[in-house]
Image (cartoon, rainbow, N blue to C red; front, side):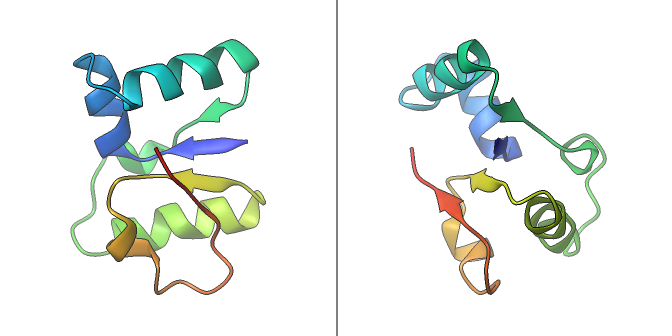
Length: 80
């Protein structure tokens, strides 16, 4: 399972590559997920909430904001 962060979803909806293709592929494969945190942003804490969800579900996070998440031990980051 791949959890898409807000930045990736916005890029995909705007048709920006490579996010658009990556999200389309994950949707087709049935491996794309997102979190309610992406809908209801909690300033400064949302990255930790998103990372915690990914860790608890053994999912990788698809994001352009790698520097926000690289400091979180055990979190698998997926690249575009």
